[in-house]
Image 1 (cartoon, rainbow, N blue to C red):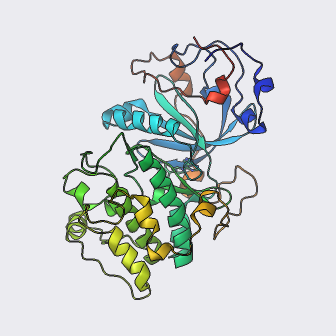
Image 2 (cartoon, helix red, strand yellow):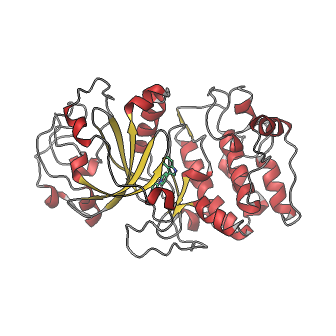
Image 3 (cartoon, protein in one colour):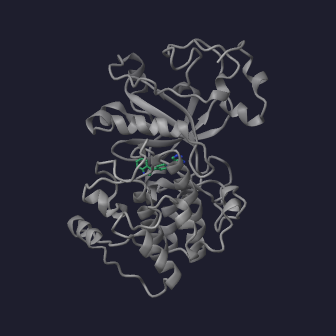
Length: 374
Ligand code: FZ9
């Protein structure tokens, strides 16, 4: 990039650009990252915990300059390394920067401290789709069709970029304030996969895993169409296909592929699910060159106006009732009640960064436009 540094607010042509505004200041970031002040922890006010697991936490945060709320995913580097997630984390960072789609969460910033990695993501106040499913028991065919249509477009988009999502599971599907779908968590996705038989590794929640992943026989884009089928089955019945609490039995059932369909599943829907949950990945709906077009063409989707879906013009079947942007009513109480702390905030500043993740820092182009890069 070339050109004179411009006062940031003057450079914003679109009011939305202001949400990315960063004060100008010197930075210790490497030349490949930016010569301007990197986003950092001090820029954000920590508001609430919305998710917590062994690997890290997701918090609702507010940017101190512009009052915009975001979801901040915090990963402890020590855990990322211990769990062999270094490559996955880098992939997630790269995929999130590369994508721009109405049904995929936007990455606003990424930065690191000596101890932690931070992703600052679009906040989805509707929470997890499965928060709503567990309350409703199961969804109507119409509601399932709406979510499946938006997810299908997101998957098809990723495949066009040669990205396999691989991790389509309940926790990764969020609802925005209007009730539209947002996919999050790209830790398991694979970049640059062209064919259907390349990626070999075994991770993820077992319920939605395609048999070729269990058999470690190599897998491609078709795994995502299998997972879409598994997700739809759960939306319609309230339980994942082949469900049993016994992991060994579950794997066995996924491999055998014999699935019971409740009588309320209509024949057209059953046909789609059977074709998506096809055990032979080469015969699965979506596995051909048409990818998502094959799935869209199934009679289950015959009433869907794909252009309207893509443009978010189809009214969602459920609109989250959120009062302000920072509402957390659709998140589990066990998280929201947790104390709002970032452990060893102070310690971090003093620590020596022996595990620097090169190239992790991210701020959008719109922050840097019109300024000289070093
Ligand atoms: N907007 C709102 N919420 C988000 N999440 C994502 C994940 C999540 C969660 C979690 C995280 C770590 C460990 C266990 C967990 N259980 C549930 C809660 C809320 C996101 C993500 N991007 N944008 C979001």
